[in-house]
Image 1 (spheres, rainbow, N blue to C red):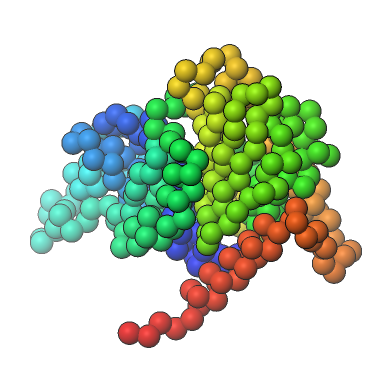
Image 2 (cartoon, rainbow, N blue to C red):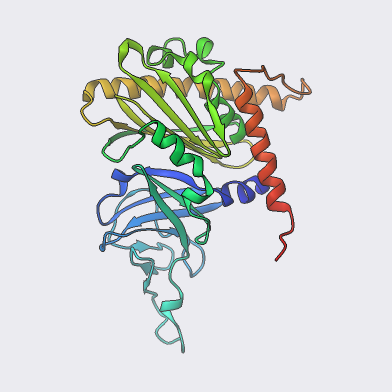
Length: 328
């Protein structure tokens, strides 16, 4: 599991927020990118920056949770940093000869904004989002995907006693939708449409018709843990974050589409949360069944579960690539 956190999540771009969540100076958001805790902050100069959420003194966090802040503060010993990452104050260091505050700013991470979604990468020198995932823009343009003007209004999180790969498997296949989500997700979409998903590298695009003639629903998944969706009622941002070998944190953020009826958006978000709760129940039981060792291996069904085959290839490729020695 440590290898996956380092070699997969530690080497990938992840969607963390709607642009609206960090639109104003002082707004901050915390998350994890594999093992790396990060904080994103919109500075007084309007620039969005990202940092490792670890004090340069002795490793405590400098931000807990999300919200508006004037600075980033380590509660352990009171070291404080500006929203630009610069060290502002370090108590009792005045007597240290040669103490250089300028060299002790927060460690940066890479950030990018794409079609109203904010992404981050733990490596500040990572290839740009568009270069690393060229299919993202191809699928985004095809779907006219843009969450920039959406209005966030609800967040729902789940701690699931299952490995992150099981959670992602469940997120990209709808083979289970008729049996598990007959009174939740299936009330919103013609879920059979999700079976026509297309992968290009680490990016997956699927499309389904909405019920009652409300238009189409487009979903874009960026491996390993980002789930994005948009339709005439909702914009959705899902995050899958591993928390050890047998636990996963699943967080979904919902935003109303501009012009959508707020009551309808709330109803849709409620049905999505019912859907996610159903998934948590199923994943919990699945993880127990696998851990029992009672079966040697599962059987994948060609067609509706082809996405899972591609996911396994992505996991293997990233683990092997990261472990291979690099030639200068």
